[in-house]
Length: 284
Image (cartoon, rainbow, N blue to C red; front, side, top):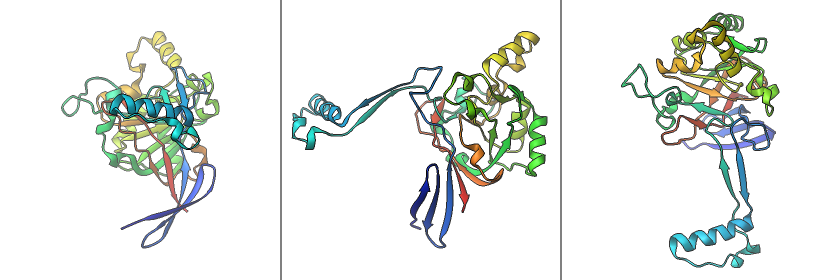
């Protein structure tokens, strides 16, 4: 069946009409944070732009070097060709999906080799979503009891392959150093609770699905308990699942469930993560 889309609206909130049999309307909500070189990042982010005029010179040089073709860029209209962006960044900048290979080099399941992001099944990344309100949680790790309480409050039990999104409120610090230090993550019990329900993708609007580095290290030094060291990530060494980190606009979702999430990761061969333009799809 051929589908034709017509979009309208303003900003990140758009309505799309899919022309098919029957006609259907959906509302799209952007759940992604930008890759923005003007914002604070602990890992260096460099964004260089070649203007259309500089792109013309670059194209001419590339044609000469690789194909032996001489072409004067001045022959182009206005002496311009195409702009070109060069970026230096990690796959964990902006909204991204962590692959099982991000959690460690070995897994206790399957053949013992965790999959990279380009090997993950697409079926995981377009499914019904549910958002859990954890905005009242303090900086640190949230346990299974808190997740169960929120699921009881909204009256929903995740089904296999549902995508669970955590609204921690961390987005209020986006673009500042506090975004990387002041947020709530999950402990191991909370992750295993969701995985036991068949969830395979867990997302958060925070920098990490684990608690902040400083909180983790402080609790480890106080207790000597190694189980507090990145339990959400390390759970993925024993059970295959993916995380979406650095989501945005979760407060724009009109209800805690009744929508689908599309979060297909960029297909980067051999990578432990891939960027995604995560979107909520709602019936209009």
